[in-house]
Image (cartoon, rainbow, N blue to C red; front, side, top):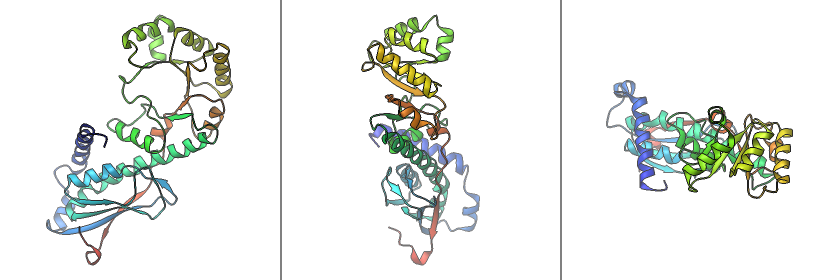
Length: 295
């Protein structure tokens, strides 16, 4: 974790996740196992193919909360192969089983996001490595920090994490406001140079208005590749391409991201990264007592 505050916030979230899963206790394990029984376990990649691992740090904290000892065998953000052992755990059997599902759920989800992000970053990188692949705020409630971290581990960028990170004037703001120009002026006064200002536009006319009004970034929302090309060409004709960043967003996925990357925007953002990737399968396997050597 970057700092103590971040660690404590994550730990608090993980405790809540555990409580959600455990409830008043694991009635099955507590019925059939001795409370003093020690055990060892391994978390193993079952993806069937290589994947980017993410969530090991969080899993380690979960097992620590349950007073287990862990040894991470790979680093978050690295590529692992099917069958790879990524973590070893030792401690009370009841404690290991208590944390098992929550730890696996986070590793599986975060690894799915990181793996898909890495794939798209590499696709875009073959065209232009300076283009940033960004996620959005389309994350599961309560999981945003974990989803965003997974994107970072995959090589993407987070865009806004919260509404106070930057000013982003979107379509619903413009429905309620008088004009793009006024919205940008008011937002500029509010942030007073402390934050970036971005304006989402749905056509060429709105884009021209946003650029002329001084938006730092224009988001071309739901533009086809042909429309986006025309918009970027227009910005160049206005002589401000080096000053105004271009973000392309909306309905972007692995099938069309290369078409947009060829247009040389600064940012390609897609909700797909956090709402659609398939989880990567991992399992926790208890080691037989004869083979167990708790640390």
